[in-house]
Image 1 (cartoon, one colour):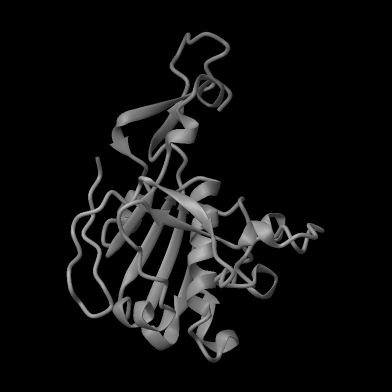
Image 2 (cartoon, helix red, strand yellow):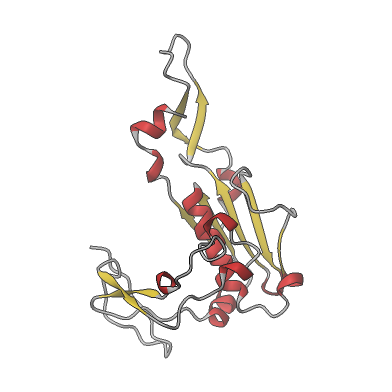
Length: 202
């Protein structure tokens, strides 16, 4: 069982709680942001903009069985993240988490056009291996690196069967890992790719 100590707004510790054991419950105060108004939310994942008429799917929050998770307080979180660097690494799941984090934090920024921008002027796309967004008023940077296996890819060995198109080096991290090693927070995923279909169709 995974335990986390949650902190009340007053700063008092609550008993350890398994935050992964719970249910989704309705909450009319959600969603935390409007994806159609966030320039970093990829259009393909904006259900409302793509024609979905109902809104009920947006109004759910996670409730652990034996504790309460403090509500997302964007102003408090921005202050705690001042001067930090957050890095998401992985596939499209990591990228959409990265997008959502940015959209939530933007709700606490007054001048969104001037203070929040992609550092290289890139548009959000799955074809770019690196994207970085800067919250200039908070000296906060949130980066995304596409690295689906997290380790080094390589070419197929000599005399390998035709179906073997490439390899992965389990003993070496992706070359891009040197770019995220100094992050303050590192969030990564890779499990979706370690299946026969994904591995053999690379």
